[in-house]
Length: 341
Image 1 (spheres, one colour):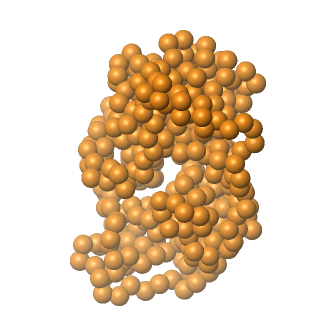
Image 2 (cartoon, rainbow, N blue to C red):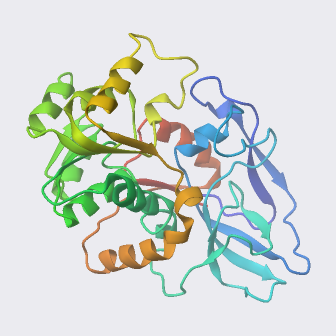
């Protein structure tokens, strides 16, 4: 890990990827450390979150948020320390969660910053189980999925930052929980440490048959993080009245054209109609920001009670962020991916 106190290292978007991002799409720059003026604070980044949504922000196609401009700092959630303050509500040493992106230092007027408790033992959790991924898991499952005791809940990307929390909440609520993950080690973690009832390896040649065998009573709630072949295997198993929160579609983020094969739209829409399935996408802070305090209180209690386990995959050094994101989009991470800056 490189510690920097002399300049502000910034990783900017150098070019827009065609398909999967490469290291050439990013550029490491150095600039002077900015100086705060009245009403501003200088933040020094401690932790940077890497998340699948960042792939969408690298493209300039229409989406729910503006793309990162070429030459601008890559977007990202951060935990930072206040280094200097000319703002009455923040003092030097305060730790805050915000979105200052892939850089060592940033100025802020305090907007959209959340102060973290000084006694917080693991501040990086503000980017994971107590932050956007945990909040996404909580609201998507409870508000859209609406699971009931004894129902079958299937969770894609079950060892990841969102899926791992979804399944554990499902168990707390009395569901039978089936996870889907990539690789035997991740599947073992999902069952042995997170407490899912079953976990199926999506890489197995007979994955679809294994999933069907694991869901003899069909699927009542499917938490979608992946799309692709995983959803193809899930679709025929959905029960009448099933609910499908659509959180992410990581299998398609690098697509440059429609996937090969038959047009499945007719099959999908017919299944949605005949089985009266609720399939709904959501953007967590756009749709649910007002419920964050509710989530934080409940999740913090579950953590203190030992009912939620959470794994972090931490890489060292801001300069490693591009390779970290590239690997994340290929499923190389194991748990919530965070850069210790």
